[in-house]
Every structure is written in C-alpha cells, then in structure tokens.
Length: 70
Image 1 (cartoon, rainbow, N blue to C red):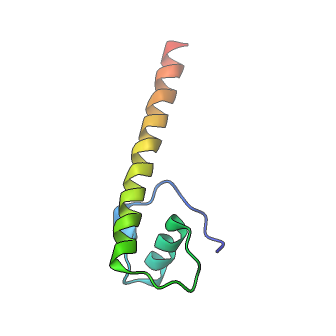
Image 2: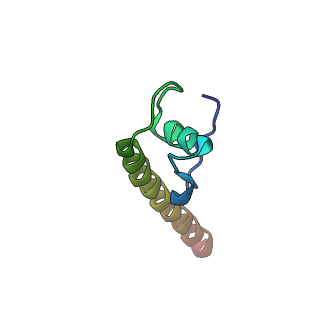
Image 3: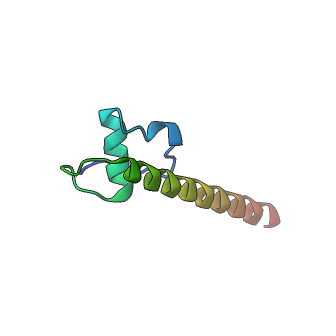
C-alpha cells in the first residue's frame, strides 16, 4: 500500500463505510489491501490514532520547552 501513515489521523476520518476510511484504517494497522475491515479493526485503529496524536502532542510540547529554555 502506497498510503503514507500520517500521525494526524483524526478519529472522524477512520470511517469503515467509505473507501478512503477503510484505506486509512488498513494503513494505520499495517494490513494488506485485500483484508476486510471489521468493527474490531476500527476500534484498534481509533485507539492507535489517539495514542499517536498524544505522542505527537507530547513531542511538540517538549520541543517548545527546549526552544524556550535555550
């Protein structure tokens, strides 16, 4: 799959009812193209997206603190 896994996966874009949403879920979970997306996959993807967004926010916060203290 050639889809870039973005850290800014907003939870509303992880929609199993649209083709693009299923593609995002597969990309986030590292699944192949021919795997059917189930409700369990959606839940896992949402949890993973939330973790990634929190980690990204922490990284940005730490970066800001570094630049302020320099």
